[in-house]
Image 1 (cartoon, rainbow, N blue to C red):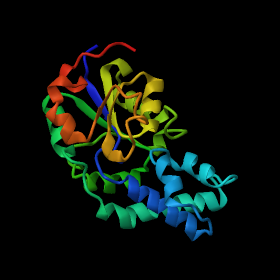
Image 2 (spheres, rainbow, N blue to C red):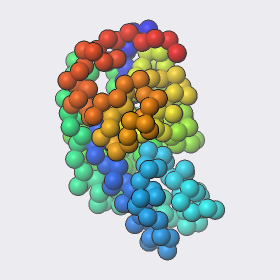
Image 3 (cartoon, rainbow, N blue to C red):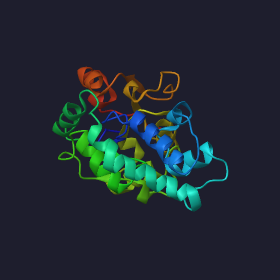
Amino acid sequence: MELQAVILDIDGTLTLSNDAHAQAWVEAFAAYGYEVPFEKVRPLIGMGGDKVIPKMVSGLSDEAGDGKKIAQRRKELIINRFASELSPTPGSRDLLLKMQQEGLRLIIATSATTEELSGLLKAAQVDDLLDQAATSSDAEASKPEPDIVEAALSKLQMEASQTVMLADTPYDIEAAGKCGVPVIAFRCGGFDDSSLANAAEIYDHPADLLAHYEDSLLGKKELVAR
């Protein structure tokens, strides 16, 4: 099948935000009396709050009580404080421009809320390039469940065999894999190669992929049916 579209994660893929998300969780939990170390929550970044909260504190849920308040507090911290401090990943804008020049359709697939996404796209300096997204509101469950990737495919009205996902966490790779979408992974999200082992390809960051574009899945444009 010929590649026609690219599904894009944003945190850790287009913007260097994974540490900020982890710190926001630490502060949000602390605001309601729960001590959650940065080192404990950082490896979970890439999952949504529906997964993170019960893993950090047994019995809590993002749908009620303290868990719901913690999720709201984390979102407020990202929107009102951290988003303005974030930087793009190296080469993210140039890579998106290249993909658009090659005629590829682009869509975001993220566990972030719609409100968070606006600030994250500005931080990535690509808010003028992307107008389609699947967010937490489009999914019953966050990554590594496939819901958000399925939502992106539905919005594109394309088959998995026509797409590739760019991402940075093992949760993205698992979610995409459940849909049959191959992943090009980036190390700039903070995960090592062993964590990203199920990706089709691994690069340091978008600039690294751009430098090897013609030899990558993006440049070849021919995908093996999965």
